[in-house]
Image (cartoon, rainbow, N blue to C red; front, side):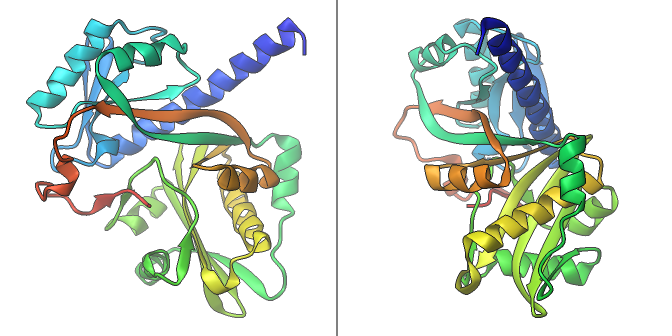
Length: 295
């Protein structure tokens, strides 16, 4: 690959990552989080829930570099809010030295999740629209309270394998309204009339995130995983999405996603202050138990 091709690939990768960044940022606002602009950083926090994913510092939009003093201002604000100092950013949008600046402040990596993307161009849109499940299977989109209750029951059931480690918190209680507004799609996959798998997509503008997947253990095969991914992609394409992304950890998850057509495109990295203090999420102070992260 020549220099021009490499430059174009980097530019395209950053464009997609910024699209992912906008999606995740908006999803937190929809969950009730607030965002304060402090210098060159944003401080995101939830007034009732101290979950790490919705209480952190992040670089301001369109910033290429954040000096350490600017990061410290945001971390101090989190302390004022009685939140543990954390910073989250998307690797790929900032130079490697940015991570060193964070470590120099005494923060350590708490979590890193790969971001994989699927571009829906016209060729792929036609392929996706031609997708039909085998005759013994059918997919159904949740459209009422009963379907929503069944969806939640399935992925919480110990007999189902949860396949994705989410970077976007889930919210219990307004699934049907979010579906009606076009912000969410909950899918059920049936085999011979029995629900064997579920998927959740969150949607913002023309971007979709496969935020949750679960498959019943006794029917868990690579073919069923592929089928569920294709059903999710079709739901996104039906809503005119141009980019679908998914997160995961480990080569097994990444290999599974590549078989569907997803490609690696950076990662989300979360740093936390290196102390022996217990995490706020585990000490019972959170008053909003309806917002949580899929494990």
